[in-house]
Length: 288
Image 1 (cartoon, one colour):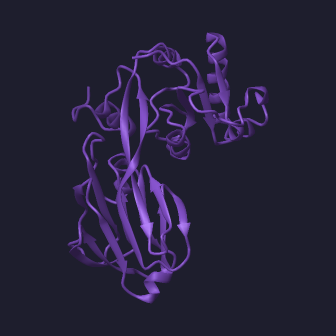
Image 2 (cartoon, helix red, strand yellow):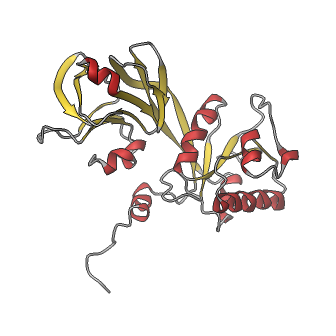
């Protein structure tokens, strides 16, 4: 692959561990004499340090990648920025799990390897939601229909104009393969390899015990109809954890989004090794 020449650094959290990781990465880049800049928000997160390195007006093609320092939440925040500027992301994991961040801040030899051109890229697709008031948003992980009040939501689910079910539940998670290891996993959903073109629908605490997660092709169009005025007022739609609106919601349409995110992985990256490490799966059932 082509060597990477100019980094844009993205930091969001002001937690000490994240700030220390960011400083370590910046010092490493300075040691390599590798050109870099910070976003305005990143400099703020670092308490004003490296303010001389801030680029407040990102010009097209100035940078060839983004280095995101934090956990998966930070990377989700950076994703829209990266997609807007067409920048692939290198993730430095200083969060709790970090499914999307491959590089450990205590071993930046991997970052050096990547910057030298020894890496590969992976495409992660997004979902798009359109509400009944024509509000739209996109998500890398998931779009979640949930409730604001202590009562079940009543909704009808359609896929490609075909009626699937009427449901009373706390809500519904519509996730990408990337998001299958996030909220959907804790709700009993399946893990989907990111190379599979699919959308997962995982009900949240459904009243009907026969309700189970469904995996559909990525070109499916999913329609959710809130079937009562109470449900329409109680419903909340969020994208990657960010609430869209609190206005009454009559209908939500979810489908494959046209944009995509590029992740940069080190040459040794293996999805299944990442799963075993992040989910603490045992290699063997026998003790040594």
